[in-house]
Amino acid sequence: MAAQFGRRLRKGAATTAVAAVAVAALSASQAPGVNDHGRQTAADATPSPEASASDGSATGNSPYYTDLPPLKSPNPSPSTGPGPVGTGATEAGIPATVLDAYKKAETALREAKPGCNLPWQLLAAIGRVESGQARGGRVDADGTTIKKILGPQLDGNGFALIKDTDDGAYDGNSSYDQAVGPMQFIPSTWAWAGRDGNGDGKKDPNNIYDAALAAGHYLCRNNWDLSQQGDLDRAILSYNNSREYLNLVMRWLEFYRKGTHEVPDGAGTLPDNRSDDGANPTPTVPGATPPAGSTPRPGPKPEKPATPQKPGGGGTTTPKPPTTPPGTPSTPPATTPTPTDTVDHLEDAGTAKLTAMAGDAFSKRISTRAETEAGKAVAKVRVRFTIVGDTDTTFTGGESVATVATNSSGVAVAPALRAGEKTGAVTVRATVVGRTVPGLDYKATVTERAADTLARTGDAALTCAPGGEFANQVEVKATYNGAVADGVAATATLITSADDATANDKGPYFKDADGKTVRTLSGLKTDAKGLLKLPKLYADDTTGTFLLRITTAGGATLTVELTVAAAETSSPSASPSASASPSA
Image 1 (cartoon, one colour):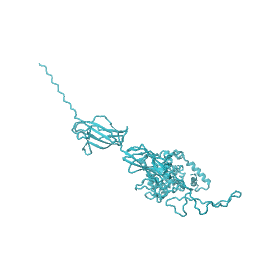
Image 2 (cartoon, one colour):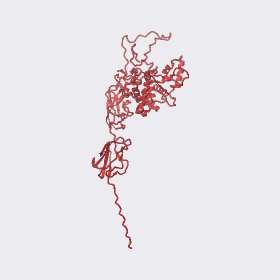
Image 3 (cartoon, rainbow, N blue to C red):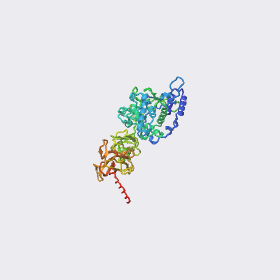
Image 4 (cartoon, rainbow, N blue to C red):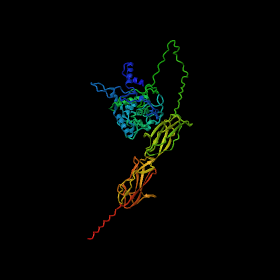
């Protein structure tokens, strides 16, 4: 990175000494560890093991732009006279559509994952580093880039080796993957992280609304809280696992937090330097046109002519004859297979039965082992777990896809599953990222919410006069294993007798919306506190003791007595007899 800083600062510098002074000033003013808010920054925080994202990063650790934010504040003091706009103000401008996409993504994540605390300035920082804000905002009215933005092919030649995962659908390359779009997602990550941010029914990595929303969800997975520095570091490192990248994104984040403004689409500033400057990629054919939207990289420098050695040096300037006869084809160097290349199949690694009630977390997790043809475990292989089918069950964090690297025993353990409200069978499919081998399906079952105990919340007697209305409503509380049982389905029936659960045709009754007599209520559910309060009860002219039975999913049952009796009437007291008057 020091070389990159120097190249940026040498522009316009008269001498190397001037550049050195500038670098020193930059290091002093933008040194990681302290910012204007006195908060610890990324460089002070040592990444935890989780920071080396097991899913290989959103971008596949593709190259990125290394231009630093200017030293001047994005909100410079007003000048007293005419003059050019300060560099800080120019760099702080974000194209209108791109800025709108970032802010809409922040709003969507605030509702979908409020605990994440995603700031739109983080998306702006990553968008700046990845694509220069969609190449200065060169997007159409719908937010789609005018030309595709593609990173170099990840063929292992100076970059990561990621073989094609999408048959070229997104990047046009059926041999290797390339990072795509303004937020630079590799196809294998976009396959599960992609979102429709502009409501057109498509998930397009080349659309800034879709890409910004996808980036927001990607950064908010794993229940990360981006207001906490440790989680913020992990999220950024999972996007591109590089300490230099982390520091750079943090600098742009702080820069945009100090202020920014909207500029017209296509008028944003373009970055100059990339992290792969000086790399030695496969040279292109002279005169060939680079693929549309790709960023050309410099080819290898021409070799310098041999320099004659000084006399007495013991050497010779006479070239040695070739050891291989002319015309003999050279033998290409042997390619060492990657761990992924050696995987032949996936095996279950002792996954227990997967069952959970709706809304609860599964207590067991899926374990998958990657093996060679000979049955040997393979470590450092990315296994993707995908929840398939029509279900609202997700992994913890709300995602339907998770990618985990196998450990030294060749085992990948999926994140915990959380059951949705839809009951029934759920399928989770394990596949190997970057290699075509048969997937391994796991079956999970979501059962309806249940209760094992019901109890009245009060003990007042339930009595009523014939043709009258019960003064107290029946309220019960449902629990399961002693815990509150919320959202549990229940039924209430005025039964004939303790041994006959059919509905009684006389005695107490409920009323429906039209005021008609009803003696069975179905479709009831306990509330968030496990409580169920029944509607008012009424009595016909029949007197006696009657039974109300409440049952729930899971088998909890409670029978309540209801009494209908005529009100007691007191007999009039006899008038005292008049005392006889004494005779005269």
